[in-house]
Length: 526
Ligand code: HEM
Image (cartoon, rainbow, N blue to C red; front, top):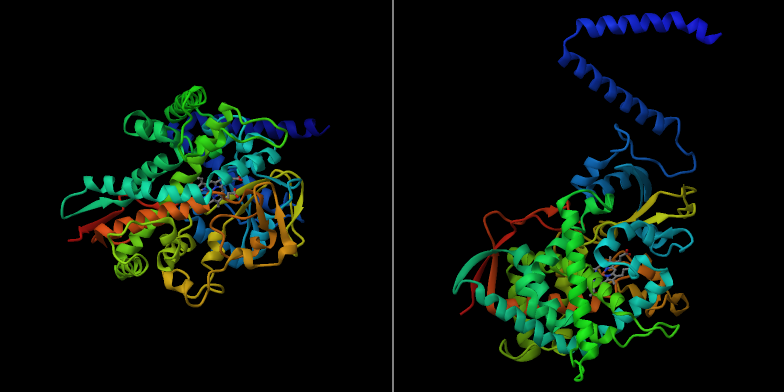
């Protein structure tokens, strides 16, 4: 019936369409088709947002185009995006990025909700596995049940014991002093991002990754690191596999680095004279799961790659920003030197683990860098069971990703005075180091399997190392590595910014480094 009624009209539309096609030039036809597609996309985006919206879900940041959503505004400056929309919608809102619904969880409540969310509700494994397995390998971190990851984190954490850290200080000093010999005699300029990345790789390899890795670093391993690194980008987060050169190189580098580690492990375990190294490999070779099973060589090799990826850019970003701020505020450099003289008697006395612990100016400098320039500004989980954002009535549906950004509380003017100013002295003055462990009581303590944590610490506004079951285990090493490099550099150089000034942040990477080239001038001290 309806078809009989519609048929004449459809025929007329068809005839008009044929007449239009016959009388219109090809470019105009193409433009009309594109216009039609854009119109349909715009219409669909409105239908999606107005008619298909879930009344219980958090508010959605309006967007013009479906699928792409807020991709451009978010990608250009995620922190500005978070702040602007927090002012409009509060601590919990959803936005669309490349077909994925992301729900921001901001403020102390958002941090607490995110980091203490139950395993039954949200999963880091579901959010990250496709990114990490091709790089780290199978059987570790996000490719295992969360209880196994907690055990693996215990192994990693225990390998960073105070005794090992104590032994690392002279090694880091030595690597740094050898490295700076390549700089000019009196003065010059360097791209701080590149130099620091090299220094962090050298110092981490010398301390954590073993002498075999360190000795091969200048030859092929640096290239393998580079190729693996290019497989750990936002593009890899969006697509596990693409027919691109960077993906092929990532896979080849993974296989090559894995086999280097497997050879090292084989040699060490077969050697009649056990390695005395204080690196992580030796520690992991002694580790046993609760069920009595020892870590396999394959697992150890995968963990080593995971640690490399977790520590390289985070420590590099922290050191690079620290040097830039020191170059911007040279009085900080004087203060750092005075502090060393106070603690050690002179700038010639060897730096030690215990001496570095007594240097609050240095400590506050790193703490302030991590407040203002935390290397990780988006932490993600996938929702696997509907979960309510506390006190809002919003239910975040299955399939959404939730995203925390402690960088927002760390720069909140309600919490930190003049929050966008780099001011390490604030940690002496108004804010008092907000020790996450001091929030709550012992009754709030929990051990997920890698040491006791205070659950309430997730309410702290200062969380550059995260909180909860996925909290960083690398913090003591990262602090020590960054501080030892900085303390060594100020013994030899003064720094100042070039005429280009302070670089902006590069938001195109997974870890937030300064945009390159990030040049600073160094002047060798007499
Ligand atoms: C986890 C930050 C250095 C190893 C994390 C997390 C953050 C973080 C925010 C939580 C991720 C999440 O919740 O999904 C940092 C910063 C560093 C640093 C700012 C330096 C300044 C290191 C180093 C290592 C390391 C040097 C190893 C030697 C890890 C590991 C995890 C982790 C194993 C656990 C991942 C998980 O449980 O899902 N880090 N990190 N990190 N970090 Fe670090």
